[in-house]
Amino acid sequence: MRRLLRAALAAALLLPLAISAVLLTASPAQAATLNRVTDFGANPTGLNMYVYVPDNVAPQPALLVLVHYCSGSADGVFYGVGHDYVTAADRYGYIIVVPEATREGHCFDVSTRQALTRDGGGDSTGIMSMVAWTRQRYAVDPDRIVVSGFSSGAMMTNVLAAEYPDVFSAASAFSGVAAGCFATDNGSLWNSQCSSGNLIKTPQQWGDQVHAMYPGYAGSYPRMQLWHGTTDDILRYPNFGEEIKEWTYLHGLNQTPASTENLAGGWVRTRYGGTGNQAPVEGMSIEGYGHSLPLSGMLANAVTFLGLDDGGGSGGDAGQLRGAGSGRCLDVPDQSTTNGTQVQIYDCWNGTNQQWTYTAAGELSVYSGASRKCLDASGGGTANGTAAIIWSCHGGANQQWDLRSDGSIVNRQSGLCLDVSGAATANGSKVQLWSCHGGSNQRWTLA
Image (tube, rainbow, N blue to C red):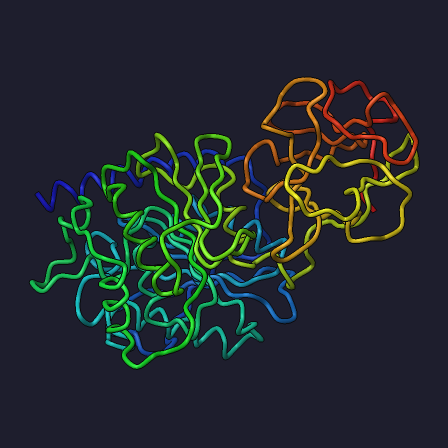
């Protein structure tokens, strides 16, 4: 049975990799490359280490540990399902470390006592040697060391955040299980009770299991973002709820969300302990999807949650968006940060509510940190007259834009252009989406 489950897991994980490989053929080659590092320190389980340093590395870069899935490889996650992280690294100047499992099946050990103990001699020990090696050679920002992974890599993401809470500031796990859920005492790396979603514990029991991984630690734990498809048949959906129990307990929170949002595409976002883009715990439930994450836009969302787009690198193209017809700038009325506020044009004055950043993910974002918002087609609308608003960034297609050479700004979901209603030029004129016609009220300059 375990062999069949592992085979199913490998097959399920190869599908998103194949899709990403097809998409990658249209991507331009990167100047910087993924390089293997040897002799990086203690490595008791024989992992391989790869590192990516973008050409425009920031003076004090963030560090992302990117962990692959079972049957995967460093190249597979770097050039495949995790490649949006690479594109963002080129934009924001952060460094990526990619561990590679070398045992049969290429799964990470999140089961043995060694793996579930800080500095215990398991895979986690080798990964932390990679982190230390990178920190010794680059001026890494100690407050922005983060981790993200998929499936087996998501399980390792949970484990690393639990064992090294004094190192990692945030984590984003796609289709994983709670730290310690896969524990075994028979030498096996597979726990079928956990994978089937039948290992149910109280929040305190999960918390106690994490505390045992790093005895005596009394400090804070990393922000945790959790993604799971409702029809996952490899690591079943109840594991999502168990992860939320674990991480809300570690943050001293109850199980009641501070906010719940129904997003486009069947995404349901729950936030605990806060309502901003970097809440202490964030759950992303994806209706009708199985063990096939990430989907388009998810990694852009994770980049913001992890803080990889704050304070590092050259950033995205940024500045005011000036309308050709009016000479006025795209503006958030009264410097509002309220979701649903419709944008307008107003005299250019260099306020933060007029400073827009065009990201590698195609977002046009305003403000920064916990206040960051994205330009959004209201309600995912695709009809003429749909209001252009600000909303919490979630990576959906209605928040993705193409800046065309003719000055038009085109919404990727609808194909409509950013338009000043009625071709008005007065302060306070509302901005909407409309069929592209090349008029001056649809042409903008980012500068």
